[in-house]
Amino acid sequence: MALYSFKLAGLSLLREKWINLLSIITLGAGLLITAVTLLSVYNVNIATKKLPEKFSVMLYLRDNLPKEDVEGIITGAKKEYAVEKIKYIPKDEALKELRDTLKDTAYVLEGLGENPLPDSIEIRLKSETVSPETVRKLSDHLKKINGVDEIVYGEKFLSSIYSLRFGVETVGIILVIIMSVGMLFVCYTTVKILFYRREKEIETYKLLGATKSFIRAPFFIEGALIGLSGGLLSLAGVLTLYYLIILKLSVAFPIFHAIVFPVRLSFCLPLAGLSIGITGAAIAIGRIRY
Amino acid sequence: MIRFDEVSKHYDTHTALRKVTFSIEKGEMVFITGPSGSGKSTLLKLIYMAERPDEGNISVSEWDTNTVRESQIPLLRRNIGVVFQDFRLLGNRDIFENVALSLRIRGVEEKELKARVFEALKSVNLRHKTENYPDTLSGGEQQRVAIARAIVSDPMIILADEPTGNVDPDASTGIIRTFKDINAKGATIVIATHNRELFRNTGRRVLKLDFGNYAGEELG
Image: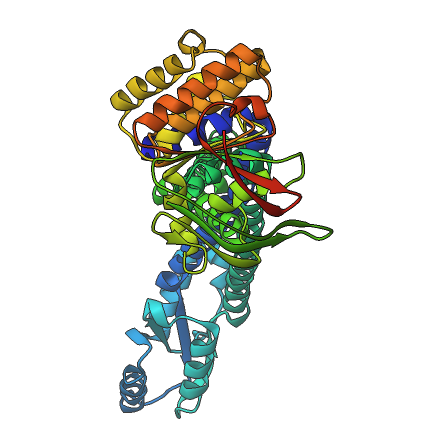
């Protein structure tokens, strides 16, 4: 009987090829937009997750602070949960680093009488704790320690990056929800139309003693096949887009080389299509009284 | 096998059946007659529960309209072969598939299904038209396909609504002979017809309907 249901679904897909094709294309386009959105969120996440590895908070100390006070500051900072590594940079070393950084233009430092740079402490944070909120709290706390003159950590840059991440995630979630509802509706409507177009046939099935599952099964299969086809179509679309970006755009804009395509998306897209197709068909068949 | 007890059926503007009571025993071949609009088709629909009575009770084998659950109706219908007045053949399936549908619904294996479909089509002289589509057949041939579909599953009961409505007298005789053969194998047969020639001299019970009222019975 299951085989016959597949045969009926296949026949219906062929017989109603235009409406089915339209649904597959619509679903494919919807899933493609969803996939591109998810890909954007994924890549922005990866980019922002790499930031904490390079992120540090600089504590500039008051001039001529006694060694015991410096050690006291380091001990106090080490007690903070977010702190991973602390490095004390004496003013002489800071100047040397500056000279090294300036390289050929280091002559601008010539003529300086006294080293103008202060002693400093570089604090590296645990990756998972880097957020504008935690860094601000830590900064406020460290500022209160006697001997700390100034704290610098690129507050605006950090906030911008996290706002961008939050924005992309929020827009992504909203878009995915809207697209999912839209795609469900497409499958729901398609199956409903297919059902009503075969109403007379279904009536005959009923009168001949067909059970509800015998009548419903081909529609579930049809919904599933439409969904799966839409999923595969969107996968083809997203792979084409990805390779176009990598091959063509990245020549002119090397930043596009950094875009990552998660392999699991190759499985997720057809599966998402399949689930949407089956769910849409289930809602449609469940709501029809016959 | 079939029992009507004070059964009434009303539609919006008229009453199709009014307090009808009769019974049909297992293995009987019975005719229901009456003029057009007398309630013959409604009576058959009530037997295969496409319609429900507004009053009274109908029992068909072990099923009873007052107690039967919606989920049991397909099972009841699998025990009844129906020859519909409008045939209800599927235009997008060939004759083989139309007849096979009855068996597919019952989950019959493919090998057995083929043998039974060919046998049923042979009994109505349509074995040579298995690959034809309904719209390429005459009215009489379509009627015979509908009969083949009704008998292919060897049901306990066969209901036929005007089964000779579209065929010539010779073909009518052939169709009645087919029903008699099936009846001889033990099936209960109920034929609704307004054609008195069909049951004349058959020696079978004829139940008469007169515009929704049961008007007694006679022997054909």
